[in-house]
Image (tube, rainbow, N blue to C red; front, side, top):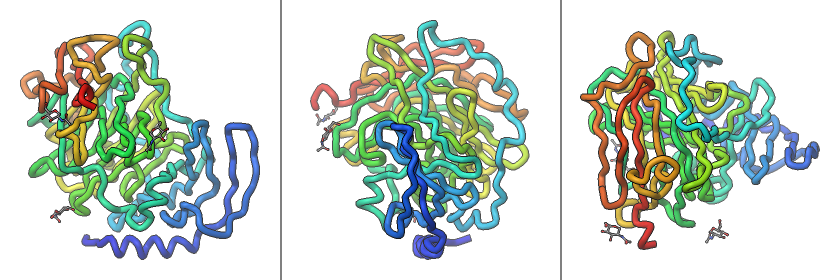
Length: 392
Ligand SMILES: *[C@@H]1O[C@H](CO)[C@@H](O)[C@H](O)[C@H]1NC(C)=O
Ligand SMILES: *[C@@H]1O[C@H](CO)[C@@H](O)[C@H](O)[C@H]1NC(C)=O
Ligand SMILES: *[C@@H]1O[C@H](CO)[C@@H](O)[C@H](O)[C@H]1NC(C)=O
């Protein structure tokens, strides 16, 4: 099915009629008040029915949007999509207690947004809403220059993957359109054009600041663009509490306390939808419906675990990856990804095939991989580096 940006905008205009009134809850001061807005707020941009919005400690605002009217359903291919509220099954081995990477390490937390059941939290992005209200569908992130460091994995049948990612907050300069990310990724197609990704990003352009935030993203082959979270339609959220684009806290400190997240993506064996799960309690956040895809409809054949920088000056003047220190510094100083496994055709977590995995860096003067190996719980490595930081 063909569609154009113009048609998508028209659909949104229709939805404006649904805009009603809002209840504001300011969680910070336990102060609950009701406000009736008759006019322009950011929901005009997305044209969604918003029951209320929630301001988090730190100022992030999430709109609680009816789960059946969330942005995903503006996608023409999802017009008649029947929402799946939970995975039909989980990969075998998901419940295996993973050994802690280190006895002093703890989990970084995404924000828990208390949207009512039947709604999902959608982060309001102030910058994009103010500057780019008409071009919310425009391409972001799929930008020009690119460096990557981590494990490339090829020529296998991949029905999912999981990893533990050490969370740092590599600094990206204010106002820069470059980003730094640490992610798990499954992709395929000619030129590996089609991808799903989950992990943390520091992207001033996307979020208006340089904090580490949890994001999902996918490359939309049909629409020819990269999409984060709910910035363009496609990702169907089911969790009423998980705030995509929310800050992960605490973040690790070089030579100090370390924090991590557990991230998984897997294909639902019944519906073929690609689920994303993160963080404590293994919360299913939502999924990409299989109908969105061309080359990873049934499975992926390529995966990547590691860091990358991209943007208009990401090679010329690369931001750091991970802790900003080279992999050789090891635990507590260099960032790690470990317990890397893939889901096989029997819907089971297994170790990746050593012969199909290639630890690599696109530029060893900026980023490195070290301590690469495999144990009972999967592959692991240290990765990262300063980029051009020393010159900044
Ligand atoms: C850069 O970031 C700092 C700290 O986050 C902030 O105080 C400052 O206003 C920012 N500058 C610009 C030009 O955005
Ligand atoms: C995809 O978009 C890019 C830049 O926006 C453009 O250069 C390219 O021709 C497009 N490709 C297709 C197949 O439409
Ligand atoms: C960043 O590093 C690369 C490779 O060392 C170098 O070619 C480039 O000039 C550097 N850029 C800046 C702005 O220092």
